[in-house]
Amino acid sequence: MPDPSKLLITVAPTGAETSKADCPQLPTTLDELLETAQRCQASGAAMIHVHIRDDQHRPTLELSRLTETVEALHENTDLVVQLSTGGSVHDRLEDRLKVLDAGPDSCSLTMGTTNFGDDVFSNPWPFVTELYQLTQERAVVPEFELFDLGQVHALHRLLDKHGLPYGGRVHCDLVMGVPGGMPGTADALVAAVNAMPDAVTSWSATGIGRSTLPVALAALSKGGHLRVGMEDVLTLAKGVPVEHNSQLVDRVVALAAIGQRRPMTPDETRELLNTRR
Ligand code: KMH
Ligand code: ZN
Image (cartoon, rainbow, N blue to C red; front, side, top):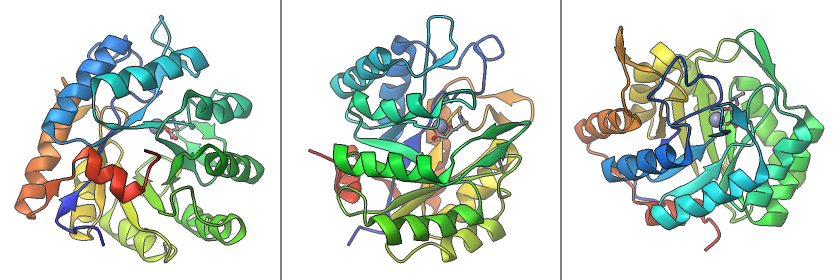
């Protein structure tokens, strides 16, 4: 039984949506990613959700770069390494399936197609089931990304048909406040958590943009874990840019302390998620 006073903090430092030109402090090179990862770990993060960039700072799923990134994160940090299989809205489904070849501990797995601002984040059902079965074969622990209530329902369907993930734990992340998905409100969070399958063993939440604080506070109140980072929010307050991902980790560590919750270590997270040793 996991200790309810412990808080898993996942940092999502880069994402695929923000350009380096618009945000020079966004970690886009491997050196910048490692520096961010180390500082965020020191601040209290235990898992890192990784999107990588090419030499021109554009999102890429190039396998050799992904593999090098996973190895470098393992060598230079203790963090649980979760690769994004969502990539950018422009990535091909076949390239997103190949992400698992890079050998991450965990990967994101989005439970359905979502309007994503003016774009479409495509996750057709056959792709979801193929990726899920691949995670089972490759011993990679999926984190189910839930952008709306319908995707919570889809998780019931997936688990009913294809069984539990590798390791037997079911970990979800509510991604809230995306234009096209569920709003980043306490009401939506409670509805989504209450609709989750009984098999869910842990969940975190993240609120995009201005919803980051309401979602973090609601998740803490409801006993959930947190994801923070510049993938999801670029300001600390109106007109105050995030200069480093560790500021976002520090802020939720402080919020959690008020609620008498302490950051979970990477090893405790490996136990929680039952990742491959
Ligand atoms: N960049 C978004 C289109 C994931 O990492 O799995 C998808 C995303 C979700 O960020
Ligand atoms: Zn992502």
